[in-house]
Image (cartoon, rainbow, N blue to C red; front, side):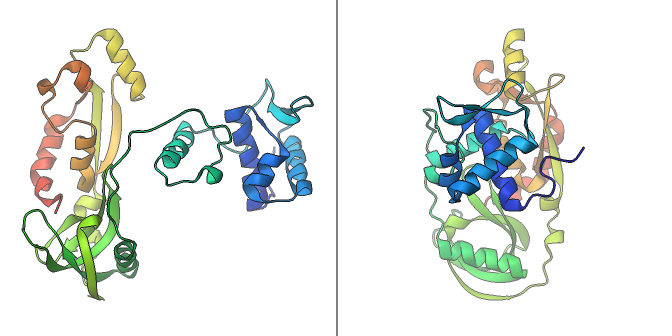
Length: 294
């Protein structure tokens, strides 16, 4: 049997995905939804709905009173895999002001809010310069304010990637001053100056290319029911879950999960999870910790 999206152009398939998104998450869709979101004509929106019914005949029925297509009892996604993370990330992006309401696929927003994150002062020209340097595999001279020194100083960096630690954006780069790969906060790069070619290859950054697996389990001092709840929270199977992270980002991952301190320092109900392979991770930290956070 042919795939539902076989033979369709990208634009048409995208609109059929949108129809299915609205059917799944909001229970219905009409022509005006498609027109408003994609700027197509009324005939084109009608054609899209007709095509969707042809490709997924059991998924939608027309409700005359509501003047919209609603999801049927036999609805089965054909054009997209419903993803809670995608839905919730749209809510978060709208809350943070990253995504405008009109650009989201969600039509009927539930009441929602999110804990605000501090605005990080990354300047567009700095980010553009770093990204351009990464693209060309060059080195760039930056004036950087480190907390280890009272005044900023110029240094040559060979950046090869950018990374987000859950709160802040970094440039992953070889530092000619310290002769090692380190993380440099984009917000602390005050200005950039010259660029030049570099012989430093990104493949030499072993901590960036090496991955570590964190084994996470419920705190052993929780009750049986509490452990089951935590297992559901973290999608654990067999009492644990695996989180794969770059070695270069290991410290940040532990800090974000609250695993960077002794679990006995907090109540089990507050700590909730522990690191099952802590001996292995502590061994890795002994080698890599000095390379994090310039």
